[in-house]
Image (cartoon, rainbow, N blue to C red):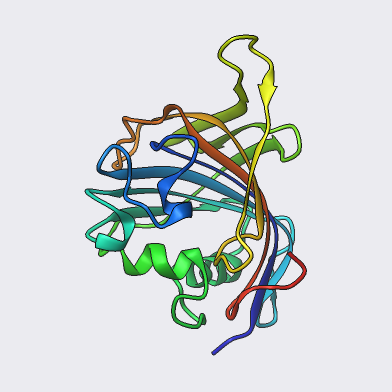
Length: 212
């Protein structure tokens, strides 16, 4: 099994309420799950292949809770990646070279038997974890953005964090409000003023690294 590490950041949004039930071992509040996510690799490697500075993303959809399976997924890899780098990122995001249940990528892939072809396209991502603001585009397939949750009375930004000491994705995430639109094969219809998260990523084939 090839050794790999990813150190970077993520911005994700899904169709659930701000307290995403997945983070609390609960069922999706609307009965199904859909999500868009972008990852920025600040430094990383897969074996001898350097992954520094690359980006990747994904769209997912499940007819019920993630753990019930039968999901559909599609991966997107930075067009700036070489063939070798793209192959390495695809392996990581499909749970290869990874201990069972060790990362969200392993779980999402295991729960998504309906896998659409990976696309290589330009990926843009600008986001600020502390400010809970950002926007991303996976080519012309998916666009999404996030902003702080707002106090319903004053409109002031409301700060909420989720702390997962034993999580398989991150240790601490800042929570915001997200929106998404798609023109791809996976249609995201319910992401509008719903859950968004921002987090640092420190992952390997064995799970979250203590650098998190």
